Amino acid sequence: MDEPRAGQPAPRESSRAWRRRRGRGSVSPRGDAVGPLYAALDLGTNNCRLLVATPTADGFRVVDSFSRIVRLGEGLSASGRLAGPAMDRAIGALRVCAAKLGRGRVARARLIATEACRAAENGGVFLARVRAETGLTLEIVDRETEAHLAAHGCTPLIDAEAEGTILFDIGGGSSELVWLGRAAAVDRGPPFAAVRAWASLPVGVVTLAERHGGEEVSAATFAAMVAETAPAVAAFAAGAGLDGADGLNLLGTSGTVTTIAGVHLNLPRYDRRQVDGIWLDSAAVTAVVERLIAASYQERVRHPCIGAERADLVLAGCAILEAIRDVFPCERLRVADRGLREGMLVELMRADRVWTAP
Image (cartoon, rainbow, N blue to C red; front, side, top):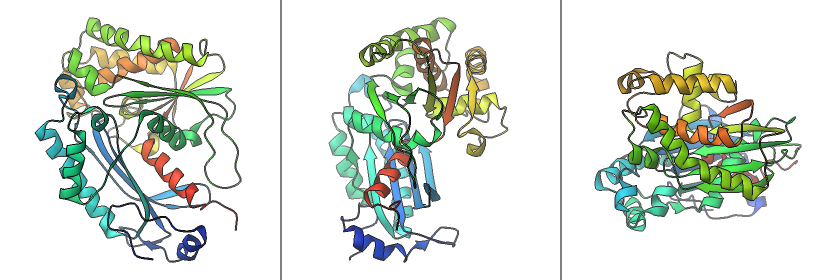
């Protein structure tokens, strides 16, 4: 079978053919031998992220990754179009991703674009430019797909004792809410996500910060951002037939909650190993949010877990989180430094039956 062009999804092949290739493996950037490689790329409103991984008995092991804040959706809410400098930044990041994808023998890849490209009048033109300049073909996914991918990526962090979980993904241009039931047990691979209801809120950290301001945020401005977001969260709860948070936990994925965890832990620099999977009680979350509201813009810039790239967005994210917590006042919140990319990898590996017992 011909090798796929770098960065392109490989042609489908039979499970038998895939199993014959499993033993070939590849080599990680560190030079150690690994199994077949899978790649997932997520181009969002704010970030461009890539993961390359190989299957293990109960999940996968990451062998290469990339993340860069590109702010593709900057100015989109006002103009309806992707701006030239924003597109240039995104293409610069995508060139790095294309180079990484070209280094290894990727068995299967999925490359997606989300809200910024969905909403922009010139989203299709931009993706044609991406193809021409990087060789990558990105797929614009709908909001339902985005919600389900986040669920598949975060299912391993669901509390098995909880009756249900409210998963939230605070993005740059939209935010997804998913009501998850108990995860289905499996013999091999990650557990299956039991999605009961989902919604995509038309608000994200970039769009909210552009409307209200992100650098100098007063208590009144913060309250206005919460008030703007709250009706959409309440509508999701009503539509799903959820009344409060009895028996539920919160599970958050995005830069907002990982930043809150880093600030809570007083990390000298962000460390995924300490953040992914951590539980925070309601009082701890409230304390961090109040601390960030009281901080000046420059203090947020100087914080090692925030920095200049997030300093004007973090309070918009906190406002979305507060709207979610007002409707679902759960005592516990679990933080996930994982999401769409991991969900894509899980779906690709399941499609190839990598966790099927021999």
